[in-house]
Length: 348
Image: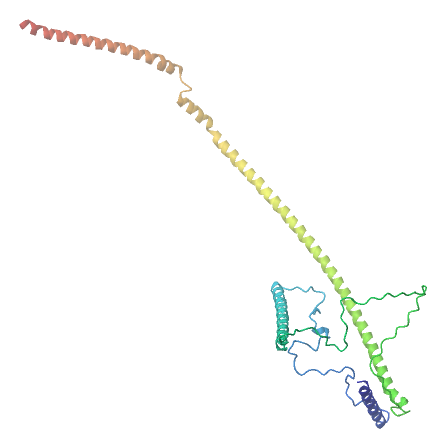
C-alpha cells in the first residue's frame, strides 16, 4: 500500500543519511536497487497454461523481424508449409480447447440443475402458483397505472461553460510530520545527488556524441558503399558492353567465314564442273561422229548404191535363176519318172 511504500522510502533515506554522516561526507549506498511499485517476483516454475512473464519484451514477440533489415525475409516452401501447418494446429487446438470448455460448462450447468431440488407435486385439492420472493413486494397488474402530468420549460438558456477536467483521484492519502534536519541535510546530501546527476548527464552526452559519431560513420560507410556499388555497376555495364561487342564481332566473323567457305565451295564446284566439262568435251566430237558413223548416218555413195540397189537386184535375179533351175530339175525328174514308168506298162 501507499503507507508501506512511504515507510520503506523513509527507511532508505534514513540509512543513506546515517551512512553519509558516518563516512564524513562520502556517499555510500548500502541498499540494493529494487522496484517499490507493482513488484511482481519472478515465478520459479513455468506457467502450465502457457502464459509468459515476458509478454512486454519485444525480443520475445514473434512479430518482430530479426536479422539484416536490408535483406528480404525469404522463406522456403518447406518453411512456409511448416508455418502454415503449425498455425492450423494451433487454431485446431484452440477450437478444441474452447469446445471442451463449453462442454464442461454445459455439463456443470446440467449437473447443478440435476442436483437442485425440484418442487414436489401438489396434494389433492391444491395447485402451485408463482410467488414473489424478492425483498420488496410489487403489485402485479395487467395494465400499469397511467397519470398525465404537465410541465412548463424555461426559455432557451446559454450553454454553461465546460468545467475543467479533473482526473479521478485514486488511492488513499497519507501524511507524516518530518522535522527540520530529521531526514537529511541538504548541503551534505546534495553532493552525491549532484555527482550522480552530473555524471549521468556527462555519460548521456558522451553516449549521444558516440552515437552521433557512429551514425556519421555509418552514413560515411553507406555513402562509400553506394559509391562502390555505382562503380561496380558501371564496371559491370562496361564489361557487359565489351562482351556484347566481342560477341557481335565473333558472330560477324563467323558469318563472314561461313560466307567465305560457301564462296570457296561454289568456286571449287564451278572449277570441277569446268574441268569435267572440258575433259568430257575433248573427245566428244570424235565419239559422236564415230557413233553416228557406226549407226549409219554417214554412208559411202557406192556402198549405199551397192547395198540398196545392186544387192536387191542381184538377189532377185539369183532367185529367178534358182527358180528356173528348180523348174528344170522338176521337169527332168518328171521325164525320168515317166520314162521309167512307160516300159513297165508295155510289158504288162
